[in-house]
Picture 1 (tube, rainbow, N blue to C red):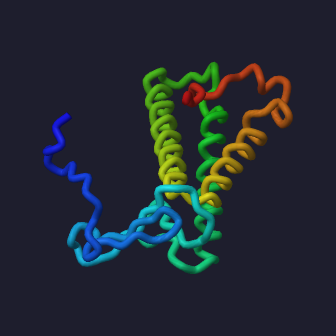
Picture 2: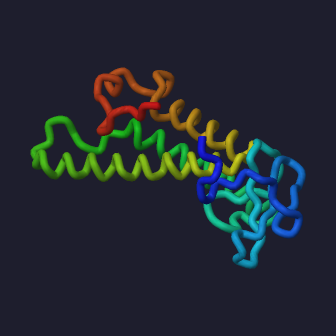
Length: 164
């Protein structure tokens, strides 16, 4: 293995460029940009998280709670889109139009699912728990036999199930 590859310096950072912090975090200079950057590499509890966007939700607990509600509803909407039926089976519309609409729904569902995944990558336990809860509640409401009616079980969703 060539240890002299550019950008692959494995030596520890110097004290002038970064300082280790608790909870598995590292504070660096952001590549010489003049601002501090914090990134957790392990799961952690607390409202001091950066979720999806730089500086969001900030340091206020109310904004953190709002971010958790946002992630919950993102996961819920992913489950709703995975089990909804917008196109009627025997509709008189064009097949091309139906296919384009299905493609649009699939793109929206994947986009929202990736946003949930990126929120989980903040490594915040609260975000992880509300994402799982959002998917669970969404499945309970839109996909489980507990809520579905007998005749609705025979009709499949517009979109194929998401695979892992």
